[in-house]
Length: 438
Ligand code: MEV
Image 1 (cartoon, rainbow, N blue to C red):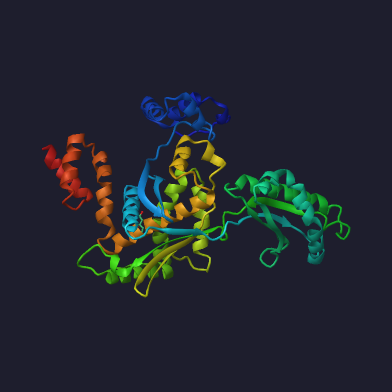
Image 2: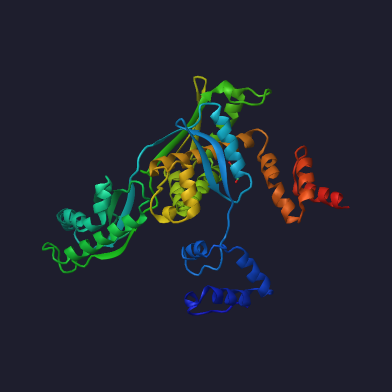
């Protein structure tokens, strides 16, 4: 039976676990054993994980895999990926190898601007608000100097502050719309601290602005927060090759492969039902690297999907063309990533992942992540338009089915060998296991 509890966060970890297992599990001792199995035996490491969030009761593991052979702008990378879906790393590795033999990936950062907004309510004359804004703007920047000093020294900081009138959509609603350059930091804390300081200065100075009436002086700050929509923090990744080099099947010409592949991309460009799944495949690659490198995958997901809808209809993030005998496949995607701050200096596996990637700057990481997304999308479309997705997917899923059925090592070896030559389906695996056991 569920029950409420007050002061839960103040309990010790062990008391929290006692309360959870006693409240929710028929076999409290078994549940406790499972929770404890996932603790790290190194107390310091466990404490680090405990302290990432509130009310930690154990760790939740994801596999960390690697996809080697990624040639990006003539540098070789092995890309770390944290993900649970069985076929993702295998597909990335296959795509990497395929393009390694065809010149690799090219990637470039198109822009790195991030956005934050102070949302406020003002009841009054817009012209007066404009002159107040113009007067206070230098002071907004000056009073945030304590926060921006170090970032400015390194070449980043506040790029601009605009006053935006949003009253057509919502009465009395205005914004300070601020653009930032945050260099190698994702910048959430920096941006939010700046915005909260702007809001304070803005509200305080309004109280003494002579042109405002008593009512106009009462600007109401609703909230100050960065935006995860970053259409001006863009990266492009691309592959291309002569069309005749595309097909690995002697019975299918490169041109036939390209035409079908491009049609699949065209469909995702105009059909939202397909575009969502197409882009989900892109995000299989992106999220896995974002997670492995300690970045915020929810922020990336939200920003990417908003970008995919920027023209009023949800559409494909990737594009393909065949021109003058050259096949080209590319993606342009907004990615606000950091390689300093946040988890990057804290989580031992994140530190290793970044070292494996040659300690990238944020811009370099943007390129690597975009390439991982493009590679994943290429692998998915190649399977979908040739063999179908299930062949490769189920092969990789075989081990999960065997584990679900409690197969032992000998049974696994036998069945993996068998399914090298036979189609994997859930039923076929169960049948084969039954026969083997009898
Ligand atoms: C599965 O995780 C991803 C795919 O569905 C992507 C796609 O359909 O393009 C295979």
